[in-house]
Image (cartoon, rainbow, N blue to C red; front, side, top):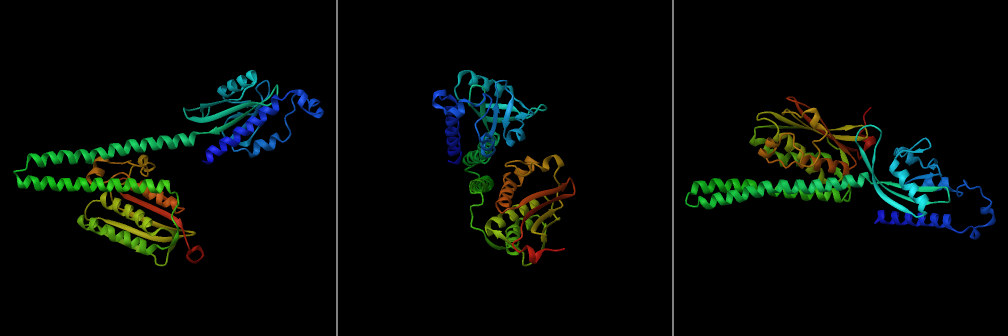
Length: 377
């Protein structure tokens, strides 16, 4: 809605500018008739400054005579030159035909590399010599669209695995109907696949809700120690099944503003990952502490560790460092993405330190609800 409204306002603005430029000279005041040909409308500098679009005014020689700061920041203007030939070509067409034109273009981000910026450009004549360009950067919206398409493709792919497994196991049960032991074995595997499918669907729902409701929960004061202990309780059975010690070093009376259940989910996801990727008879440690105006929740393990080249991607949806092990442990590839979104929705961040064969530490940093009381020198 906001984008459409902004587009409408900019469209009206360009229409007014074009009508001003194309009015017959007999309709203009005598003071305007006497104005030099290269004089721009008064207030043009202020107009370019307040526009949300990047604005550029070109003269008859395609030289930049006015431009907004954002036009320089985007690399559209260098000195008095419009950098991209595609924009110059569009401007010449408008100057020749005296008609407003628009186009969506993919422009190089710079002279080096292959990065592209996607922009929507609109050009209108100002007078016989000048044209104005308004340029909106669509790169972010394009990226969001690509992420959405990738997400749908990934979901489709991930759902196929358990659904296909259930179908094959159902066929196996049907063929082994006269072998009770085989039926029991296949039924157990079907239960495992059904649980994994249910977890995947629930995490897809959770992630979609977090992304569509950026911060749309009513924040209340949360006892961080209680949230941490609730997450530990939900992880104990999985840890005990692998003979992993859960160690907790939790400072009392720490508080943050947020949603209790979401914080339990985030901490629990970190604990579950640590347990899943740790060997038996090791330990997983949960610590909470004050760090200035923030509180930190850290989960450490002595597992396999994460290679440096994978550390920046572990918070992406469906990204797995070790796909085979992740599937064996029932991982969906969404747990850390959910942690990231919960942390960000609470005004915080999540980071990872890891070294192969030495283990990993994931740290959530959230604003401290009592920064003056908990701050340390």
